[in-house]
Length: 487
Ligand code: BG6
Image (cartoon, rainbow, N blue to C red):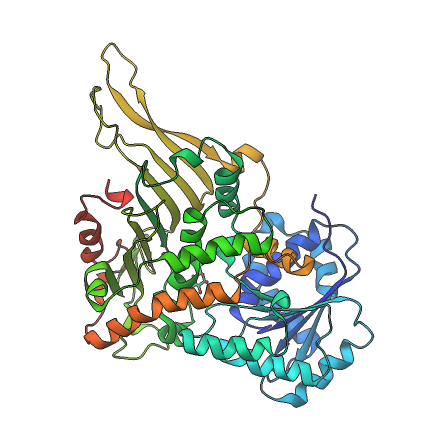
């Protein structure tokens, strides 16, 4: 059983929001349930709605409990958890509301204090300023910033400057929940805990890398936010680029935050910039039309709530990235993400080069070695090796050497937010983005947005329930390769 995080006050801005209900409160419930000695916890949700504490608890019961499977709901633990929960009404931009929060936090300056900002990024600076003015920022305070942080380098810089005027960098936790996923931790363990991997981990042995985060859900009631963001800002700029960093980084000298983040930063700075022509040739953006998911009809993006009638926002992006360094020169990294795709799937596929001279007949198509790190739905690692098919003939086929984490460890996997919240409370920055990483990511993404905008093209349509526009297959087929599900 995990040790309880230390005593803390955790203040959620966006306390009635979707993320709080779906992820943050369930994550804390699990930590609370599985920890001992949690009297020192205090969770204060801040929101704009005028709710009494009882009304907020009823709201949580209605909107949050359904995200915790019944088998995991221990009623005694749940009601003890609810006792830790308070609600305070704050309009983020209105300094007046912070007095109530200050009253509640009186005499607790010696406790770890976490401000979790799960609001629109354009409120971050105001919230931080108001917290400071109300005297709430103590040396033991930390602030968590949800992504996407800004919409481009200029807006991210402004937010970072303003937040940085109140909190120092070691107090700022820029969260990317993909880094908290068990499989990503395992990729780090696989790469840096096994001597046999490193000699294979370069252009000499790797042919291409594919990173896919495919979702079957649409915009899920977040239409207004999503229509301003799109898949590039919502997923590519952060989750996919961070996964790319973990795959491609040089071994850091230690697991210390800055050692890891220095290496990730080098990867981001090594990404080859896209010219407008590259954007035309190496990126594909799509937007879903009506279709079916699991046999059920779903509307097209333009008919979802909160979406502009003529919206050009992309719900799908695929691109070919390249790194300009010795280890990876010439190895394409294909990145792809989309909503309303055929399957919910997040995985990293490392395809190795073929044997230099084939002497064995293959029993089936394919046959090259491949390492698949599956983040979801079922987290695990598979290494595909060629083995002989039983029988008198000498024929080989690739079969996976399969490590299913759930089976191997017979234990519930922590949700990414559980790990990351515990890390924040314990002050561990390793899995959070440093400002220069974020800047480097925007610097690479901005020209792509600009070229899309200047081209005047619309995103390519794809039917919900498919793998995206056909141009996405063409992007990879052109290189003589295919996405894994087509292989
Ligand atoms: C979030 C995005 O960061 O990640 C959402 O804002 C997306 O649009 C979600 O649905 C996906 O996370 P996960 O962990 O469910 O794959």
